[in-house]
Length: 444
Image (cartoon, rainbow, N blue to C red):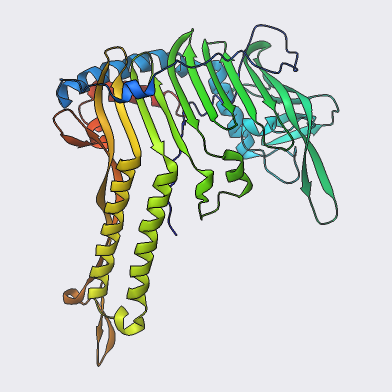
């Protein structure tokens, strides 16, 4: 069975991994990080904002101006020593995974923060990591870039939570302890350029009920993320530059997250684990995307749609080879796929409400809706001849199956519908040029 699962994903700043920085000396035992909280936005109020009276094209001008202002705040990243050093460390970890764990590769900086009782000094030697045994510290000594010698150090100090994680092998097992807190300090040429902090709280199993990550670079950037699980779970994240908010997001849900994890995200959704979800993603101090999702009812409805589709497809397939040779079967299959996609789009728009708004001017720019559209098609150029069997390139007997998908559209005040990807890919020339310049700065 095919299921659409609605999750709010925030993927930004890939190199600013779950990290933080402060001015005090590392203690490694703080229960909470000074992460603050995101802006308190009345989601119901914003969702009910009246539409802006500007035309879609006029809105583009304002959106581009705000997008460019965001990129201007990102400019320091192009020369950020902390970011470039972390990027290069990730490259080295991907090139050669150090033997920190027997059972998994370490190919990313965040992997070294997973457990508290791992030690060793790892020094980069041309093409591989050389390990020096240690019982007190976890340290990486490496070049900050291709032209440098070993002038960068990442030191990690973690406090044991007492919560065990056991990896079993055929004839032995390894026991690791999850961290209650961890602090990593990144230095280049003996100067601190970033500090990495983690704090976690557990109950009686290895999945934390509260996790906080924080990172601040010497360039003035600070990123933090906080997850609290309970009857109502909450995820907050924020990116700032010199104390000015660049981006922040909030995700709230009553879904039973731990039960999802315990059940391995099985394909068959257990509806009683679902609930509602809502939140927002805000760019700087104005542009905000707010959303409200009834996940339980959406999953129920999609389950019914999928069951109906499967029943119809089973009816098509029961005729066996003779029916397979009938090209009308492919027409029906295409029609059933379209019907399923159209129904899923209707269900999505019924149970998922999202809007792009201006919170400083109290108006809605556009609603975000889903629209079912043809995505691809499959052509079979073989045809069946009673005397010759399957014959290739039977142009007059081609069989075509249409495939469909749900694309996001912006709905404006005059009911104009514009595909989101098309709207944001046309008319943003100045932004595109600045974005290309920003991305090119990270090409290595």
